Image 1 (cartoon, rainbow, N blue to C red):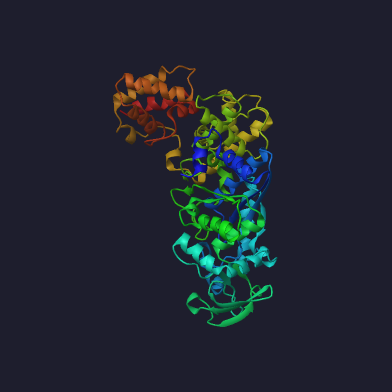
Image 2: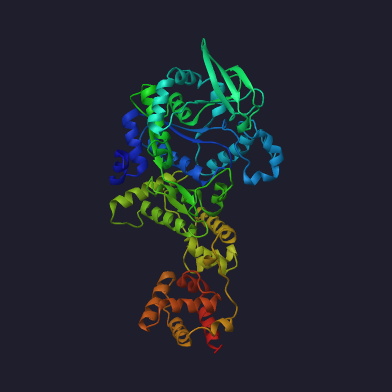
Length: 544
């Protein structure tokens, strides 16, 4: 564990605060926060983790009085290495462009100027939805402006030091520093640099376009910059950080392994660029989808664009910000959505001091995570929230009738009759998200429909004495009990009667839903009403 990681772990402060204070101590109030992404495919949840991590640091730097500039480097000079699965029907169009730079590959759908632009537009729209608004900078533009020219010359001039450095850090010598587009076939990934010489401030290169890498087999002599070119990743990253003045940047923790790209970049800053103040290159844990790391080029995983349809963006940002920085976080969209929303609601109650917890460290970090997750300034008064999981139950009991759900919530005094327009709109937004989640992503464990009459073929498989005790318990259920209080009451009755609570609740679900599981029993009874549940259980008894 590094010094920085230890500081974050023992601190009562949120990781964004710890990092921001440390980088201010190094570089002062002038800060440049950077994130990067290559538009080789859809912007997915893994890319998203990096951008929102940097967003938190940028926001916290500003709150601490720093002048922070947040940028997104869009690497549109990557070679087009494979046809993604979601574009297989366009394989005939795209195949001739394999190896070409993605900013020159056509958009197969014809809606943007290039393959890269197609995904850039999608990514920027998604970022905007989550209030992630870095200044987008195209790598192709930086190369055209000559930002990298002096670094190409420097790396060649210090090639022996570069050989030594890369071999020392990675275990193998990095002899080829550049990708250079072949002027004959436009392939970027096939040419190999076979010779070079300096002519004034220019570099004349000799390249050979290798057939085994889909090249044309031609040798060419040209001035570096006559065609598209690119410094290879580890060197490019350090150069970009240098001329953009990056002070802090986050990347996946795979970049931080021994001999990884962070080690390379920092060594280049120190030994090749001769810098004493090195950028803070932090790492974050992976955000996985159902236990899998995602790939934008293969089209795997849930598109980030769908997340605002199931959760308020601030709710999802809170999930990320409340997690320790380097902890891997898995998100199972079919299971985790109600719990994620509930965690946000608890944090909101802590922020507005409507609840408290004894553990100061937990409280401080939770409140800061909530503040960072907000899309705008917090409301002066705490908004009224309806538990997402309860809404899932209400919606299915009332067949997704929004107005009936709202009327019932008022009648049960779960929300006030005079609820403000602001809070009513927040409720309606959550209702729509819960509905979309149930219909499109929710696990069958959350889905149900209430029967009109018990199915006797199912009921007869149940234990009759258990059903009788369940009926008596419902008849004696105190009127004031709601939700979890009902669940706890039934649990205690089952224990008192020496019935396994699981059998008690399973019998209820089999009678009311014709399935072995369902929502929280108390919530189900509360929503349906004790009289209706009692009727169904009474009819079930008549099956015997």
